[in-house]
Length: 538
Image (cartoon, rainbow, N blue to C red):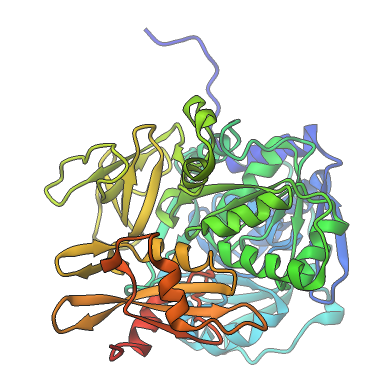
């Protein structure tokens, strides 16, 4: 017997229609490249997205076609999110910080017929266009007055976004699609090979956004003003373009300027209550606050992910009255899998135990599941110290990669490549990426544990630990640190600072003080590059 309930497909277009109908006057604020602010709202976004759907039709975009974007966070990029997916096409967000070779590979592998790009990225598109067989048009996210020139191959047209929009009439209604229709295509960062495509569906994206609005996850309210610092080309900005409109929260888009001064200006002037981004952003911002003496006036919460947030950095924001919540996920998981929200047992914790718990990656969100397995495939105990390979599955977990033979199938555990530990309360702590673990004398050393201790030193701004070859022990940890401005910590003092906070055999043999540490295209420390640079270090 089936229930007597209505059935409606879970579609991304329904999120925008809800926001326009019930939160129409809620603001969307974008900082342009010149520093000016552009204001719109959900009603206007819904109208312009339906006009853009008409533009896509005129440009020959059909259901299932891939449309590339090369753009920073903005109202126009948000329009693309809804118009492309809502029309039944696939929004392929491409990271402009990648190498030209990787960008060309992604756009070609996705078979993008159109690419929409910010003016600043026109030279990138022009450089790679000859390599893109499917490309037939480039649309610059600009008005006519600011249109750049571009030398494109024959047969590839150049269009001005606002000119196309001015000539378009909005479609009457969004098409009624099957909820399993592909909606977006995001590629992994490709740190261990070519980027791999993760193909999301309308259903997976809507369910992930709904779960993200649970009270113990992002818990957005219509009164919130959300600073979307995580780029829209990074796992769909962690779903925020869907999560915020679903709740009716305001969206604050920083545009291309993510330096600490520009970000602080956006947070304060636009009265942000919550901000979302990777640890590097918050490290740079806290240093700017210390150097400038400025304050954050309205921010209450930071959601951080993409890499482990050092405990010292969490404490620093707590002292400013800003609560930090650790989240964890991957491109393959849309991305939310865990978020650090307290259980009743957490309320009993004090001091070091409480801080250690808050520095973990949190607990599993309903709709997905996570397990930690040993090398034989058996689940390890939830004892707080037994590490294993992290695996996940669920409603918004990938079953394989786009146009790639590997396919794990529905319902099976997907290997994450991370190593983690469950405690008795079900909180997961990442101890490392599998490839970043340091094996010394048969014992595993966590590079993350070393880094967290190092950045707690009062003279250290950033730290990275890597394995270097050792004749006796196989590998030994090398610690690379960037000092705070005006400081020059002695390497031996940094080694002594680690003593008592980790086993003596885990203390790095050497500490190197440098001006900067290389970061990848999504803001993560690029350990592959560090291993190349220091391959012969002893």
